[in-house]
Amino acid sequence: MQIIGFRKIRKYYLLYKMYNRGITRENLGEYPKALNFLFYALSLKSSSLKTYKAIARVYAKNKNYLNALDYYSKAIEKFPDNAEIYALKADIHRKIKQFDMAIKHYDAAIEHDYSNNEYYIKRAYLKYYIDDVQGAINDITAAISHDNKSDFLYSQRAFFKFHKKMYSSAVNDYTNAININPKKNHYYYMRGASENLAGQKDKAEKDFDLFNKYLQN
Image (cartoon, rainbow, N blue to C red; front, side, top):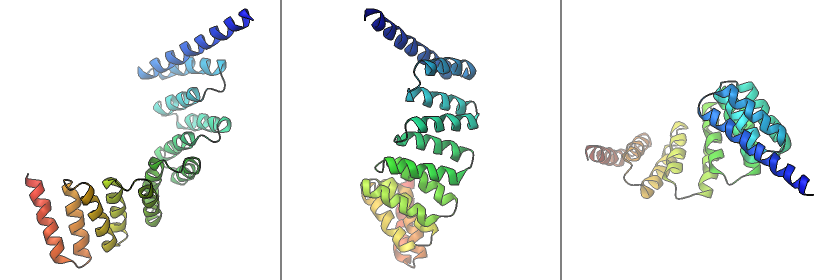
């Protein structure tokens, strides 16, 4: 029993050592050497999620995106309920402009962790980019349902509504953003632009004046 215990301790010490050497090489930008250490670490423990993530990350840093996707896929096979892996894989698809695949993997990330607003926000940007503006609005609305104290979320939804020519609704969202963060002068300008296009000329002029006032201070 003592021999088995010693072997286990030695194995985990070696795993820890190889993994950390790999991360050190990664931080130095020595990606091939980093991968050598990380592959060794993975051979010692094939169920190490952080090692799969590290290998995929190093491949991505070295612009070897296909191998990065491959290792995220392998991680998903072993950890199918881990939302972060889907999101990390989505980030690679987004980086190489495979937007439909990126959205698909953010869908999976949200399915496994519906409360993570970062996933909704990233998916919203992708939907906006492919001209699914209403889909982007829906994602930010979902994020606001989790956090209704974020001026950023209200301003982002207002921006999407502005581009969908939903000017009155955009005004309401910019107003919510201003109520939360009244010192963000950009919000006054965008609310003024929305009011102007909604036919509220007097309100627009007041907001443009406030924008200029904050700009000068």
